[in-house]
Length: 238
Image (cartoon, rainbow, N blue to C red; front, side, top):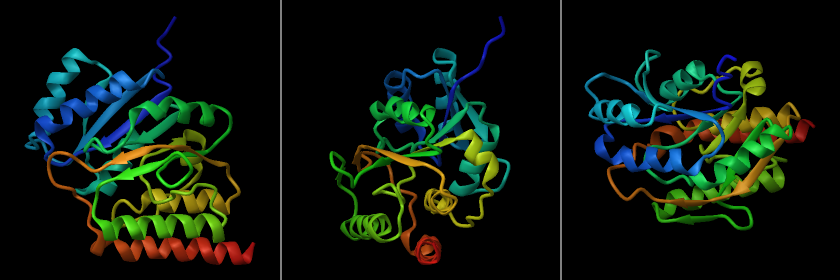
């Protein structure tokens, strides 16, 4: 019988993570029991993360590197990973160790049950957020909860990029984001307006212990606000 391939594709965008990525990838491999592949997406061959991934691949074949040929930046890295993924479900996870691998199998169960998007939620009952800039945390929580309460979005945490997407939804939904991590909000808003099923599981988010964050709030905030407005206007029209 032929190999049916992975049920889950985990896309991990990286930028100069180096050795710091090794425990994160090991944690994903150990924490996820669903048959999976891990696509570590880098922008350029000289990235010091590349030899680390190649070394890990020899030990853990589910981990493999993927060069982003769509143009530099985290958005294109995520898009390249989605395009190259083979699973029925695609999970976006960060390389900084902030995401919780232990909830991934729960997310897959909800997707098998019909959810088009499953969000790991910091702001629902049982979820937590530990560390990170206070202003960024306040904005994220405020945006997430107001979209949930007043915008009709089924998850309390629509801005969190730690999300699982069903292939059927990704194939039917064009990506319009231009900047970066607003991709998760865009897809969650589009699913909501299309009356697709959005589910969530509680998670604990931890600020990165090593390295420097590549999140650029000032640059990306207008793009987040765009999709926030789209959600609210769509709610009024519905």
